[in-house]
Length: 146
Image: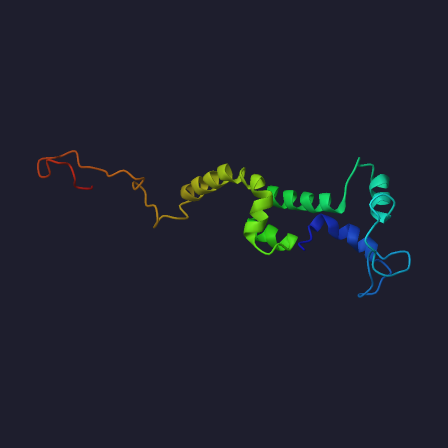
């Protein structure tokens, strides 16, 4: 799971006084947290304390995927984060989130062209238009490129 830099200070505080192999968020018994009861478990209590109206662990999963997509993650990265078997599965669920990428792709292609990062693939003057000579005496059909 990718770890955003802004979380490092929070995790560092949570890690204080712990050994390398210790759990950061242990249960009351010091062991792994058990699957929470939907209405009275540790997760429901954390949601109540946070002040957000309602959330489930699955809601957080969808939120993580949505934030990854809006941050520019490609479908393969989101697939890996979520543990989906294939990118197709991720797209089946989250395809509508990637629709906004179409304008971003067009802008990125335009910006790349302006930076001349693809000059050999798209040389200046080769914008799908054949440039014809003004002097048509030697080529009356005007088919000669300049």
